Length: 178
Image (cartoon, rainbow, N blue to C red; front, side, top):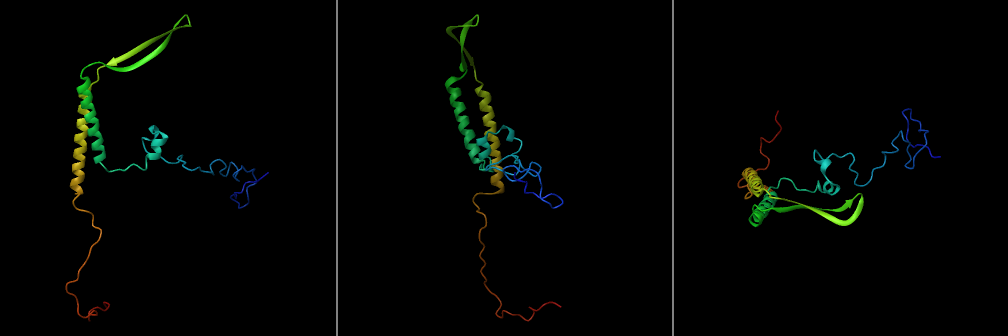
């Protein structure tokens, strides 16, 4: 039987029985191997408990600091809400539909009962929320543009042109002080 390849505190090899990875349970038999994409030790923050595996994978690739895309998306959602309000207004809309077999004394009768739930959606409240969100994003965008105007690109290269310089590259006072 294979022995553990780890050294003990005394410097001698461990004499415990090794697992297939070459270490005993005491010296990292279970935790010695990590798998590709292992996220066990990584914390994503407060929202990590509610993210799906696909969302956790996309977490790092999401671009931060861009308000324009959020603003466009919110305006599109506002347009959709306005269109739905115009189409349905204060009429009842189908919310859900549930079909259940009808049983009498525990026996199936072959008939089904359909239960529908309808409700009037509060489009005014939704439109107010989306309008407030657009206003908030516009305010944030204005503050960001004030601190970093788009017309001025960041300084990439500075060129210095010497108009007049010394005629003698080694002036008498260029020596070390002292």
